[in-house]
Length: 476
Image (cartoon, rainbow, N blue to C red; front, side, top):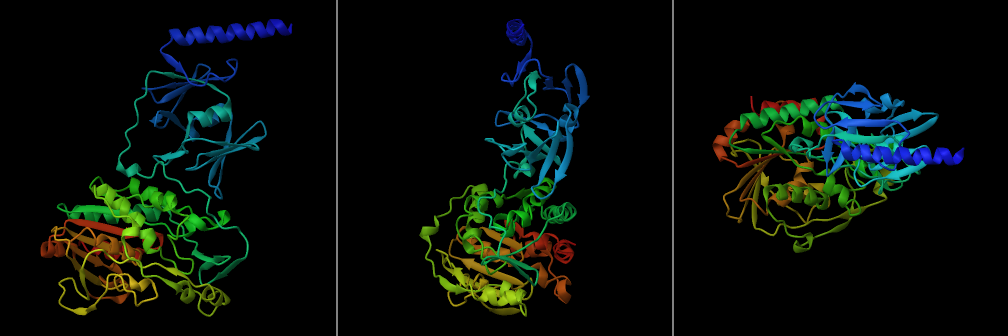
């Protein structure tokens, strides 16, 4: 009897193999048991079949780097799975036959019961839907998959810039020796903010950026959103997952805004000192890797860090010491001073700070990178209303940066490629915090004729109604 069953299975395999050769469909998971369920995909129709029963797809099947990706929520329930959500990972939870599996968002790792799988490509979020690769689907379900027709490689536009960007857990701190105070969390000797980035704030922020770009049709507008240190280093249980919010921002940007992926280069260099451990800012080194991504988009080369003279301090204690003032955590932060790297521009710079957009009310001369200041304010003199820096690059190029303090370190690198750099802090204008001085970007363009505009912020600012309003008021 066993031999007959074996022969029948062999004949079935041969029959299916011949059928596949004669059919326009292509088999994609030949290792599956051919007696199991068969999933049929269609290149030109938003539908799929399971054993001849058709179901609708809410979106297209994707071909990305020659790999088929399919929407999880559409297909898995029809394959007998009950789906849920685990926000701590974050992951779609798929349960079938008492086996619980985890399809982790923006990760190449999937768990099927106790078994861990890792793939060349991660899951993707596309049109707000989680997509899994065919390889993941096959390992999860054991289904035999065919494709009717031929898929062409999906052409993602620039709004999908972070589609294949994800933050790993490689550098996360252990969830131990945790202390709290003043809105700051400290794991061991590393302090960080626990800041989220909601979809609503992401869309509202994108709309503001779009409005600015629309008002400046002759200017090339770029948007950079920088995650906090917690995105890379917070214990897994405390990870803010801001990258998902940044993706939402970029997916909602207008076609005349160019997003810059700062997450990927920061992740690639997370083993370096790209953030402070006593300060909510990134370091000048971290800003360098983001600026290099910006320069690459412009088609420019950037010298290696070794080309810059560094004037460093080993006794820096950052903003978290003040954030936690009058709490025991402040003493712990002050007891753990850290490295402050100060890379000096390789060009000559003359810089001043002003209170007004027409540069008539001067505050002081400033240094682009001051070796005298042992704080984050060493970069472009801190948060002034308007910083104006003129270099000897002599290429005629002019850049405007709209920022909060994360933009200060970024601006130090732009000096090496622009003749003029104007840095505007929206918190100093248009009613924010009671500031009555007005700033209008259209008038400022007519006054200076700048070429490029970079709007750079971190999640706290993205979520600030006041900052968003001040930026929007710059074009009203």
